Image (tube, rainbow, N blue to C red; front, side):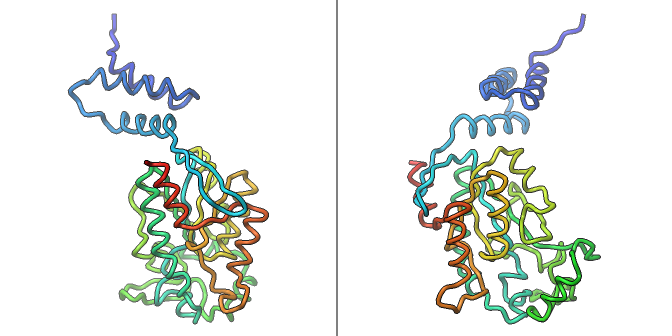
Length: 295
Protein backbone atom coordinates (compact mmCIF):
# COMPACT_ATOMS: atom_id res chain seq x y z
CA UNK A 1 0.00 0.00 0.00
CA UNK A 2 1.30 3.44 -0.91
CA UNK A 3 0.88 6.35 1.44
CA UNK A 4 0.48 9.97 0.37
CA UNK A 5 1.74 12.49 2.86
CA UNK A 6 -0.49 15.29 4.07
CA UNK A 7 2.07 17.71 2.64
CA UNK A 8 1.66 16.17 -0.82
CA UNK A 9 -2.10 16.52 -0.56
CA UNK A 10 -1.61 20.18 0.29
CA UNK A 11 0.45 20.76 -2.85
CA UNK A 12 -2.08 18.83 -4.94
CA UNK A 13 -4.95 20.94 -3.63
CA UNK A 14 -3.08 24.15 -4.40
CA UNK A 15 -2.65 23.10 -8.01
CA UNK A 16 -6.28 22.01 -8.34
CA UNK A 17 -7.77 25.05 -6.62
CA UNK A 18 -5.57 27.45 -8.55
CA UNK A 19 -6.79 26.01 -11.85
CA UNK A 20 -10.41 25.20 -11.06
CA UNK A 21 -11.89 26.69 -7.90
CA UNK A 22 -13.75 29.95 -8.11
CA UNK A 23 -14.22 30.20 -4.36
CA UNK A 24 -11.57 32.05 -2.36
CA UNK A 25 -12.35 30.03 0.78
CA UNK A 26 -10.82 26.78 -0.50
CA UNK A 27 -7.40 28.27 -1.44
CA UNK A 28 -7.23 29.89 2.01
CA UNK A 29 -7.85 26.55 3.76
CA UNK A 30 -5.33 24.90 1.42
CA UNK A 31 -2.63 27.42 2.32
CA UNK A 32 -3.29 26.95 6.04
CA UNK A 33 -3.18 23.16 5.61
CA UNK A 34 0.21 23.34 3.95
CA UNK A 35 1.61 25.57 6.68
CA UNK A 36 0.22 23.21 9.35
CA UNK A 37 2.04 20.31 7.65
CA UNK A 38 5.33 22.15 8.09
CA UNK A 39 4.98 24.13 11.35
CA UNK A 40 8.73 24.74 11.65
CA UNK A 41 9.32 25.47 8.00
CA UNK A 42 9.04 28.94 6.52
CA UNK A 43 6.38 28.92 3.76
CA UNK A 44 7.88 28.41 0.33
CA UNK A 45 7.17 30.48 -2.77
CA UNK A 46 4.08 28.50 -3.73
CA UNK A 47 2.53 29.02 -0.31
CA UNK A 48 3.46 32.71 -0.32
CA UNK A 49 1.80 33.23 -3.70
CA UNK A 50 -1.41 31.54 -2.57
CA UNK A 51 -1.55 33.54 0.66
CA UNK A 52 -0.91 36.77 -1.25
CA UNK A 53 -3.69 35.99 -3.71
CA UNK A 54 -6.11 35.10 -0.94
CA UNK A 55 -5.33 38.23 1.07
CA UNK A 56 -5.87 40.52 -1.92
CA UNK A 57 -9.09 38.73 -2.87
CA UNK A 58 -10.53 38.34 0.62
CA UNK A 59 -9.57 41.75 1.98
CA UNK A 60 -10.15 44.38 -0.72
CA UNK A 61 -9.45 47.97 0.25
CA UNK A 62 -12.39 50.10 -0.83
CA UNK A 63 -11.24 53.40 -2.29
CA UNK A 64 -13.44 56.37 -3.16
CA UNK A 65 -11.71 58.77 -5.52
CA UNK A 66 -12.86 62.33 -6.16
CA UNK A 67 -12.99 62.65 -9.94
CA UNK A 68 -14.83 64.14 -12.90
CA UNK A 69 -17.62 63.76 -13.91
CA UNK A 70 -18.30 62.10 -10.53
CA UNK A 71 -16.51 60.35 -7.70
CA UNK A 72 -15.78 56.67 -8.30
CA UNK A 73 -15.19 53.75 -5.93
CA UNK A 74 -12.93 50.76 -6.52
CA UNK A 75 -10.89 48.19 -4.63
CA UNK A 76 -7.15 47.68 -4.92
CA UNK A 77 -7.47 43.99 -5.79
CA UNK A 78 -9.19 44.92 -9.06
CA UNK A 79 -6.93 47.88 -9.89
CA UNK A 80 -3.72 48.45 -11.87
CA UNK A 81 -1.67 51.58 -12.52
CA UNK A 82 -0.72 51.92 -16.19
CA UNK A 83 2.42 53.96 -16.95
CA UNK A 84 2.39 54.87 -20.65
CA UNK A 85 5.56 55.63 -22.63
CA UNK A 86 7.57 57.31 -19.87
CA UNK A 87 10.76 56.41 -21.70
CA UNK A 88 13.92 58.29 -22.61
CA UNK A 89 12.98 58.98 -26.23
CA UNK A 90 9.94 60.96 -25.07
CA UNK A 91 10.79 62.39 -21.66
CA UNK A 92 14.57 62.71 -21.34
CA UNK A 93 17.06 65.27 -22.57
CA UNK A 94 18.79 63.89 -25.66
CA UNK A 95 15.87 61.60 -26.52
CA UNK A 96 13.89 61.61 -29.77
CA UNK A 97 11.42 64.34 -28.78
CA UNK A 98 14.14 66.60 -27.39
CA UNK A 99 16.39 66.12 -30.44
CA UNK A 100 13.41 66.91 -32.69
CA UNK A 101 12.92 70.27 -31.00
CA UNK A 102 9.76 69.21 -29.15
CA UNK A 103 9.26 70.83 -25.74
CA UNK A 104 9.44 68.01 -23.17
CA UNK A 105 9.13 70.22 -20.09
CA UNK A 106 5.49 69.19 -19.59
CA UNK A 107 6.39 65.50 -19.67
CA UNK A 108 9.21 66.07 -17.20
CA UNK A 109 6.83 67.84 -14.81
CA UNK A 110 4.79 64.65 -14.56
CA UNK A 111 7.70 62.59 -13.24
CA UNK A 112 7.31 63.46 -9.55
CA UNK A 113 3.49 63.04 -9.47
CA UNK A 114 3.80 59.70 -11.29
CA UNK A 115 6.52 58.54 -8.89
CA UNK A 116 4.28 59.45 -5.93
CA UNK A 117 1.38 57.48 -7.41
CA UNK A 118 3.57 54.46 -8.17
CA UNK A 119 5.05 54.41 -4.66
CA UNK A 120 1.62 54.65 -3.02
CA UNK A 121 0.22 51.98 -5.32
CA UNK A 122 3.04 49.55 -4.52
CA UNK A 123 2.57 50.05 -0.77
CA UNK A 124 -1.11 49.22 -1.15
CA UNK A 125 -0.68 46.14 -3.33
CA UNK A 126 -1.77 47.73 -6.62
CA UNK A 127 -0.08 46.25 -9.69
CA UNK A 128 2.10 48.53 -11.86
CA UNK A 129 2.17 47.95 -15.63
CA UNK A 130 4.58 49.86 -17.87
CA UNK A 131 3.90 50.30 -21.59
CA UNK A 132 6.84 51.14 -23.85
CA UNK A 133 6.84 52.17 -27.51
CA UNK A 134 9.58 50.11 -29.13
CA UNK A 135 10.19 48.33 -32.42
CA UNK A 136 12.25 45.29 -33.36
CA UNK A 137 15.77 46.02 -34.66
CA UNK A 138 14.75 45.10 -38.23
CA UNK A 139 11.70 47.43 -37.95
CA UNK A 140 9.47 44.64 -39.25
CA UNK A 141 6.72 45.74 -36.84
CA UNK A 142 6.95 49.43 -37.74
CA UNK A 143 3.81 49.54 -39.86
CA UNK A 144 2.98 51.46 -43.03
CA UNK A 145 5.96 53.24 -44.56
CA UNK A 146 3.74 56.05 -45.86
CA UNK A 147 2.63 56.92 -42.34
CA UNK A 148 6.18 57.27 -41.04
CA UNK A 149 7.31 59.24 -44.09
CA UNK A 150 4.55 61.73 -43.32
CA UNK A 151 5.70 62.07 -39.70
CA UNK A 152 9.41 62.41 -40.47
CA UNK A 153 9.32 66.10 -41.49
CA UNK A 154 7.58 66.85 -38.17
CA UNK A 155 10.10 64.93 -36.07
CA UNK A 156 13.14 65.59 -38.28
CA UNK A 157 14.40 62.18 -37.13
CA UNK A 158 12.67 58.83 -37.24
CA UNK A 159 12.38 55.42 -35.62
CA UNK A 160 15.43 53.27 -36.26
CA UNK A 161 17.84 56.15 -36.83
CA UNK A 162 21.27 55.52 -35.23
CA UNK A 163 21.82 57.31 -31.97
CA UNK A 164 24.45 58.02 -29.33
CA UNK A 165 22.79 58.40 -25.94
CA UNK A 166 23.78 60.96 -23.30
CA UNK A 167 25.48 58.07 -21.48
CA UNK A 168 27.64 57.34 -24.52
CA UNK A 169 25.97 54.06 -25.42
CA UNK A 170 25.05 53.33 -29.03
CA UNK A 171 21.40 52.87 -29.80
CA UNK A 172 18.61 53.56 -32.28
CA UNK A 173 15.55 55.70 -31.87
CA UNK A 174 12.50 53.81 -30.59
CA UNK A 175 14.22 50.44 -30.97
CA UNK A 176 13.79 47.85 -28.23
CA UNK A 177 16.35 47.16 -25.54
CA UNK A 178 18.26 50.42 -26.00
CA UNK A 179 18.64 53.55 -23.84
CA UNK A 180 15.98 55.11 -26.06
CA UNK A 181 13.20 52.77 -24.93
CA UNK A 182 14.35 52.44 -21.32
CA UNK A 183 11.99 53.90 -18.72
CA UNK A 184 13.37 57.20 -17.42
CA UNK A 185 15.60 56.76 -14.39
CA UNK A 186 13.23 58.26 -11.79
CA UNK A 187 10.46 55.78 -12.66
CA UNK A 188 12.40 52.55 -13.08
CA UNK A 189 10.27 49.37 -12.93
CA UNK A 190 10.78 46.99 -10.02
CA UNK A 191 11.15 43.21 -10.50
CA UNK A 192 7.51 42.61 -9.54
CA UNK A 193 6.21 45.13 -12.11
CA UNK A 194 5.05 44.20 -15.61
CA UNK A 195 6.63 45.77 -18.72
CA UNK A 196 4.97 45.43 -22.14
CA UNK A 197 6.27 46.70 -25.48
CA UNK A 198 3.80 48.16 -27.96
CA UNK A 199 4.17 49.22 -31.59
CA UNK A 200 1.14 51.47 -31.98
CA UNK A 201 -0.39 54.31 -30.01
CA UNK A 202 -2.83 52.02 -28.17
CA UNK A 203 -1.35 49.71 -25.57
CA UNK A 204 -3.94 47.07 -26.47
CA UNK A 205 -3.07 46.73 -30.17
CA UNK A 206 -1.38 43.35 -30.76
CA UNK A 207 0.02 43.20 -27.21
CA UNK A 208 -0.54 40.99 -24.18
CA UNK A 209 -2.05 43.83 -22.12
CA UNK A 210 -5.64 42.61 -22.31
CA UNK A 211 -4.77 39.00 -21.46
CA UNK A 212 -2.52 40.11 -18.59
CA UNK A 213 -5.27 42.28 -17.09
CA UNK A 214 -7.85 39.53 -17.45
CA UNK A 215 -5.56 36.94 -15.89
CA UNK A 216 -5.02 39.24 -12.89
CA UNK A 217 -8.75 40.06 -12.81
CA UNK A 218 -8.21 43.80 -13.10
CA UNK A 219 -11.09 46.12 -13.92
CA UNK A 220 -10.02 49.63 -12.84
CA UNK A 221 -7.06 51.19 -14.68
CA UNK A 222 -5.29 54.28 -13.35
CA UNK A 223 -3.58 55.98 -16.30
CA UNK A 224 -0.38 58.05 -16.15
CA UNK A 225 2.25 58.93 -18.78
CA UNK A 226 2.54 60.57 -22.18
CA UNK A 227 1.20 61.86 -24.37
CA UNK A 228 -2.35 62.77 -23.39
CA UNK A 229 -3.95 63.15 -26.82
CA UNK A 230 -2.07 60.33 -28.53
CA UNK A 231 -1.05 57.21 -26.60
CA UNK A 232 -3.00 57.92 -23.41
CA UNK A 233 -6.28 58.67 -25.17
CA UNK A 234 -5.81 55.83 -27.67
CA UNK A 235 -5.25 53.31 -24.87
CA UNK A 236 -8.09 54.73 -22.75
CA UNK A 237 -10.53 54.40 -25.67
CA UNK A 238 -9.52 50.79 -26.23
CA UNK A 239 -9.80 50.11 -22.50
CA UNK A 240 -13.35 51.47 -22.44
CA UNK A 241 -14.28 49.39 -25.50
CA UNK A 242 -13.12 46.30 -23.57
CA UNK A 243 -15.25 47.20 -20.52
CA UNK A 244 -12.42 48.31 -18.26
CA UNK A 245 -12.90 51.43 -16.14
CA UNK A 246 -10.22 54.01 -17.13
CA UNK A 247 -9.23 56.76 -14.69
CA UNK A 248 -6.75 59.37 -15.94
CA UNK A 249 -4.70 61.43 -13.46
CA UNK A 250 -4.42 64.78 -15.20
CA UNK A 251 -1.22 66.02 -13.55
CA UNK A 252 0.43 62.67 -14.35
CA UNK A 253 -0.10 63.15 -18.11
CA UNK A 254 1.24 65.71 -20.56
CA UNK A 255 0.92 66.74 -24.19
CA UNK A 256 3.47 68.75 -26.21
CA UNK A 257 1.02 69.29 -29.10
CA UNK A 258 -0.80 72.59 -28.69
CA UNK A 259 0.65 73.25 -25.23
CA UNK A 260 1.09 76.95 -26.03
CA UNK A 261 -2.50 77.42 -27.23
CA UNK A 262 -5.22 78.95 -25.08
CA UNK A 263 -6.99 75.57 -25.13
CA UNK A 264 -4.50 72.71 -25.39
CA UNK A 265 -4.79 69.18 -26.78
CA UNK A 266 -4.15 67.98 -23.22
CA UNK A 267 -7.30 69.71 -21.98
CA UNK A 268 -9.33 68.60 -25.01
CA UNK A 269 -8.38 64.95 -24.45
CA UNK A 270 -9.21 65.11 -20.75
CA UNK A 271 -12.62 66.56 -21.66
CA UNK A 272 -13.17 63.75 -24.20
CA UNK A 273 -12.25 61.15 -21.61
CA UNK A 274 -14.45 62.44 -18.79
CA UNK A 275 -17.44 62.88 -21.10
CA UNK A 276 -17.27 59.63 -23.07
CA UNK A 277 -14.63 57.12 -21.96
CA UNK A 278 -13.85 57.27 -18.26
CA UNK A 279 -12.97 59.49 -15.32
CA UNK A 280 -10.39 62.23 -14.70
CA UNK A 281 -8.76 62.89 -11.34
CA UNK A 282 -5.34 63.95 -9.99
CA UNK A 283 -2.40 62.44 -8.17
CA UNK A 284 -3.27 64.37 -4.98
CA UNK A 285 -6.79 62.97 -4.94
CA UNK A 286 -5.46 59.47 -5.60
CA UNK A 287 -2.95 59.74 -2.75
CA UNK A 288 -5.59 61.13 -0.36
CA UNK A 289 -8.04 58.35 -1.22
CA UNK A 290 -5.45 55.61 -0.76
CA UNK A 291 -4.28 57.09 2.56
CA UNK A 292 -7.85 57.41 3.85
CA UNK A 293 -8.76 53.85 2.91
CA UNK A 294 -5.61 52.46 4.54
CA UNK A 295 -6.30 54.09 7.92
